[in-house]
Structure formats: C-alpha cells, structure tokens
Length: 554
Image (cartoon, rainbow, N blue to C red; front, side):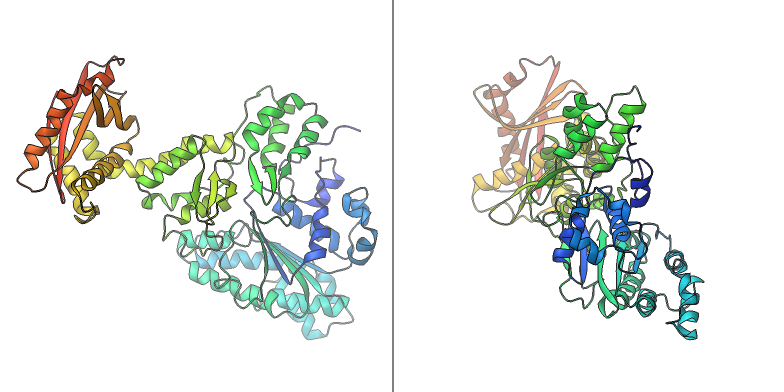
C-alpha cells in the first residue's frame, strides 16, 4: 500500500482512518476519560494541538450506529469489555463553536443558530419515532429550522434523543471560548457570555438526560462567568498530568513518523523548531507543525522550516496588552528571547472581560495559548516560563517584541531624538516630563546613596527601551565604573552618563557639573578604546525630587 499521507488539515476522525492518512494513535484517551469522567469535563489546550480531532474521535467511538471496524488495531480495541459497554452505544450531540465570530451580537447569535440547526438536522430520523409525540416532533422540527428557544436547544435535543433511544446523551462542545474572544474584541461580550451561560446551563447543568459532556477551548474562562452553578466541573489544563499525552505528539511519536516517511535525518531540525512544549509531565511537539513539516519535506525541495503554527494563530489576545507594556515587559521579553526563563505567577482561570486589566495577565495568556511553555515551578508557586522552540522564538523576534517595543519607544521618542541631536534642553525637558507623570518624589528612599540609585535605575530603564542602543550599567572604564554607557551603533557614536543626586534644587547644576567632571577625571572614555567611533558624548545629570539638570560636552 502507498504510504499514508500526512493529515494536513484533517480533523474528522472517520476520514482520517478510512482515507489513507497517517494517524498517531490517541485512542487511549477514551479509556482514561471513561475511568475518570465527571459530569462536565473541560480540556484547555492551545490551538492546533489536536483538540478537534480528539473530539471527533470521541463522537465516532460513542455514537449509535458507528462503524466499529474503524477502531480495529487501535489501542482502545484491546479494551474489549470497555468497547462492548460503550462503543456505539449512545446518542451524541457534537458542535464546534470555532466559526461563531460575528462582528456584532446579532450576527454571532445567527451563527450559533446555524450550528444548532445543522446538528438538529442530523436527528431528522426522530420525526418517525414511535416514542415521541406530535409536540416533541414539532419542537425538534423548529430547531432544525432555526426557530424556538436557542438557549434550551441542547437540553431539548438531549431530552428527545433520550426519549427515543432510552440512553442518556453525551454532549461534545469544541472551541467553546472562540465566541467569547470575538465578542470581547467586538464589544458585545456581556451579551455573548449570557447566551453561552444559558445554553450551557440548560444543556449541561440541569440536564438529567445527559450522561456526561466534554468541552474544549484555549482558555479556562472563570466558572462564575460561564459555568454558573456547575458542581465542580473537571478541568484539565496544560499543567495537569492527567491526559497529558493525548494532545500533541511525543518525541517517540515524532521519531516514528519521520522514520515512516524516510525523513529521520531531519529529526534534530524538527526538534529544534517544533518541540519544547510541556503538558503535565510530558514534553510534546505541536502536531500541526510536525504534520505540515513532513508534507513540505515530501512535496518540496525547500528544506527550510516554516512558521506553520504562527501563521494560523490569531494574535488578537497579545495585541490587547500592547498599551499596557512597560520597561519591565521589555526586560522580560529580552530574557525570553535570550533563551532564559522568567518567573511569573499564572492565573489559570480568567474572564475575557477582565483579562487585560493587569499586564501580569499577559503571561497567563501567552502560556495558555501556546506562545510560552513552562520548565518547572518554584517553591513560591510561580512558574518558570520559556519560549518553547525556534518557531515561537522567531515569532517573538519578528512580531511580538516589535509590537511591545514600538509602544514603549513611542512615549519616549522625543527623548531619544533629543539624544540623537545632543539637544540637552530637550533631554532635560523630556526626563522631567516623564518623572512628573510617573513617580513620587518619595520613591527614591531615605539616603543620598539610595536616592541616586533610584534615579540611576529610572534613567537606565528609559534608555534601554530603545532598539538599536546597547545600554550598560556600572561598567568598568578607565579608573572607575561609569554609571551608564550607551552604544549607538546606528550613528556610530557613544554616550557616557554620570548620575548624581542633589539635596536641593539650587544645587542641581553644580552636582550635574560634578558628574560631568568625574567622567573626565576617571577616564571613562577608555571604554570605547576598541570601538571605531569618532564621537563620544558626555553628560552629567543631577536629580532632585521630580526635577533634573543636564550638562554636556563632546
């Protein structure tokens, strides 16, 4: 038989198994679910990690009338007693909300209706049921025509399916949070949250005709906003060990897939670009990346890895934080880009309405949506976050850092231009304006040394926010340590800054002059002895409360 094709874009389980596609067996998830299920089971994973395919697998396994031969030879088929009890035994309601993306509430509600209509039409056979009365059939027909009570639609279908089959229903809802994300972006979050809360409440909270439900999404939306009144829904996030191997490809699975296609020589490159995620206790690759990469290697002479995941993932959630970016955000992004970890407390349960009220939520969003992963957890409960692989690192360098840094730079652009033109009056004006807007004169501490250190750090953070500048603090130079060394490679010049604290407004200029003289007396220019720069600029900057004085010479 011809080699099975990489399943690019295939998330229908039956199609994948019957149309000669390569399948990495994840049917073990069925046994784990049946061994541990709760009434409502929520799985949160990033986009393109196999959620939809696994939901299709569950539907195929449980639904009455399924072709049981599809599972022949798969791991679950060895669980004979379990298959006898559950395979093909239950009515299944299955919907995906990934296409509910209306620009306003009315269009989104109509899209929701279209999903319910399509699912109700699958049950048109109920019109011939001897177990349903005329009213039941009329109600079901109304749903398939887009009429009736949308909020109670899941409950109504469940009741009528149970009435006909005598079996409780399994409800599968994929990508439940997509409508909420779009609603928040387009200004109708409250209405959409209420609609989904009502649909879920009728369909999964007070539904005696439901056996259990499985729900998937990227974010765990706070239960008080959506899952109101649920009794302890089982939530399985990317940090939980349970179910950790069923979403994403393990290293062994990737090795086997590459070997199957005769591509084993590309293992190291595949691992560098697409590995690095950690779910629970398992390290995984992004399936979408690996599948598309194998297809590229089979069909194209181009052996350059591509940003497959990055090119399909919406960046709306990240862009919402740009206006909140600060120098700390920049420093964290720089550390991540250098391959370091950053320690952050994560909020695993968020509401879209509150998600961008705190810049710290940025890290939770980047983590849960797949831009970051974790390397471990600290004793204080914080998480060690890192960029997972080369693909995401490339995305950070090309897009994410640029968005944030552009914002950070934007507010200080007049100051940077003043340094470019050596306009000390403008430099002084901009620093004073920044301090007026952002600090209290009590922030500096109680001693002259601590106060000077405070202003030193403030200026250092402002200068480091500009791309193209290398800014160093307390670097050995000449016969001492220069407070701030600024290397401008674009303009081929250097800047040396000495920071002083003044005890009064009257002493600002004299203290600034002292700083300038210190630069000459200690020979700080020696720092640039190995640089081919024609010009070195010198600045003495003194601070008192919210005022500064800048003096300079070339």
